[in-house]
Every structure is written in C-alpha cells, then in structure tokens.
Length: 331
Image 1: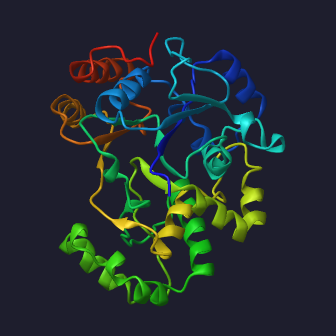
Image 2: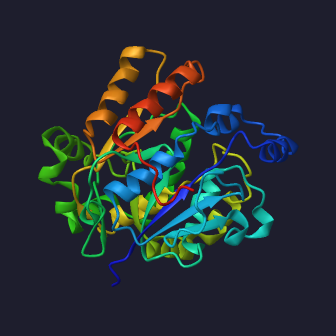
C-alpha cells in the first residue's frame, strides 16, 4: 500500500455575496442546519496552512474543497495544493449543496485522492509537531473504539442515531467485540472508558460511539465499501441541500471501520475547545495555542452570542504568536 497521506479540507466563505445570494434562493427550513455560525468566516485559514507547512510538512497533497471561491491570499500554484470545486466530484443533481454531510459522504470521488487521507474542518489546526504515524500505522487509521449512549436532543444527535442504526443493521455487537476484543479494550483508552465499554457490552445493540471533533484519518476503500452496501440510502441523503435530522454523516464510515477492526488503537491526536461568552474559558484556548500544548486543536464555533470581533482578534493574536510568518501557500 502507498504510504502517501493526503489532507482534505472543507471550506466555505460565509461572507461571499454570491454564495449568500445562492443560499438565499433555497429556503433553509431548519434553522439549526443553516444558522449563521455554521458558515461565518473567522479569517484565520492562513494559520491552517502555516501549521501544515511548519508542523506536518510530510503531507502528500492538500485537497481544498469549496463551492468555487478561495481566499484572496491563497497561492493557487503551490505544487501540493489541489483546488476542488463541489462540481468536480458531486453529481449535478445534488448541487448546489449547503450540507456538509453531502460534501463529506462523497469524498471518495475526489479526483486523485490518495487511499490514505485525513479529513479536516476549517476549525481544526496544527499547533505543534505531528508525525504521520499519529494518523496511520501500517496503512490503517489510528482511532479509538469508544462506546457511548446517544441522547436525542439536537440535530446532530439524531444524525448520530441514523448512523448507528445503519451499523446495527449490518453488524452484531457481540460478534464484533468477540472478533476484535483488543480494539474495544485497550490501555490507551484509560480505565474509565474501558469500564464504560464493558458496561455497554451488556446491551444487545450498539447504543452509540464517541465522536472526536478532530481531524479524522480514513481509507478511501471504507467509503467505497459502505456505498456498495447502502447506495440507495446514501443517494437519498445527498438530495438534502441543508442539514436535516434524517441525514447520515461521514461518521458512518468511521463506525464501519471500527466494527471491522480496520484501525489501530491509539491516543487522540488533539483536543476540542468550545468558544464561549465566558472570557475565562476562551483564555484557555488562547493559552493552548500559544503554548503548542496539543498537536491539533479544534475551535468549535457553536455560540452565536459571543463577541465575534473581539474573540476573532484574540484568536488571530494567539496563532500569530506561534505562526507569524507567511507560508508558501500564501501570496
């Protein structure tokens, strides 16, 4: 198997007037799936590229997936950069789409995508050195089979339930764990999570899996395998222009490989933070960036009530402290 590892980054400029006009043409019924903070631009993408160049220069290729707009500062001629328009791989009947689930469900169709790739959202950044074995070992993604319980409350929890329902349709829980015991009970998971997995073994079906909101390593073959089994269902989801409670997500492919034992148990590659109206909480994020405390961090924008301009300024200041110089991905 090739040892090449690609990065895939999904990005949208929520301030693009053409994009906003097109979005407005399609009435987003569900406010949760189309709210402003799902699309607003923090103007910090340059630090994502600086982090790649500084902390993960081993990457083979970067596929930047957008609806056709790009940052003005981007060096589009960089030899490692592959600019991908949605129309380059998403069938025309599903376009335009404002649903990140649709964009991710079809990633295996990206032109020239390596068999091994890591999926990023634009709120995930490198803040210290990371090697390729943090994502893949012997061609298998590094991951954790951490069981959990889904509590249906938000749209995302319903989507999780949809994913796990497909898994329970194709896999018998006790057979999976019996076949891959060391994938579900591993010292890297810690005592409490191993105990939680043991307790949840008492249930006949899978009640959920923990989802790290961090960069996720994938084999392209996993996407192809799931599509071969559930093409009709996945195709129906691709008709959803905005997120819906009936969606499936890329986590389905991750669950699938966990069930098949096609991963290497490993420590998580980073930490997720939630931006808040609490300045003390946000200060922890700024400090983690400045200290390079984690290999990767996710800065989740989930609160519309934050002081956007002030928090944005603080975040950019923190990133600039560790990545002050332009990368070759910038003009």
